[in-house]
Length: 146
Image 1 (cartoon, one colour):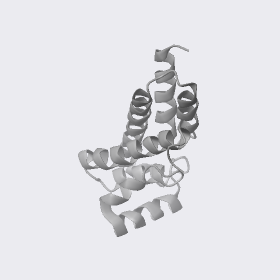
Image 2 (cartoon, helix red, strand yellow):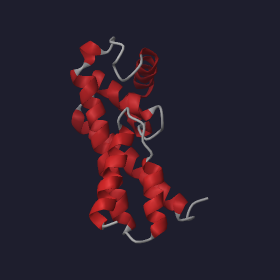
Image 3 (cartoon, helix red, strand yellow):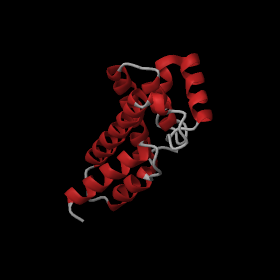
């Protein structure tokens, strides 16, 4: 694979993983790290940007489609919304630092939009969480941690 194909596939995998669609960005990132053909910093960069942009899409869904949240097809279920709102009630914007957590993070990013968290604030907290996630994946996959 060419570098463009690698970075593109990692970006797409990471973007899809951060939306409410299923994805496996950690596995994709780990596979490219194991190959040792591509600079790790670029892998982290493309994975993080894709994941952050997917989270921004979730925020937009929450922000602009709030009036549709009771529809059966709405991507976040009522229980997930209630849990997300509960987290925001307890921890405020700081709960976005958990936006990297599987099954929890994606609904949190939608709830942030529903609750009208400022986009700039959202991007800062989500970026910290997403970059941290991929740095940890790199450290674990290179046996530098644990």
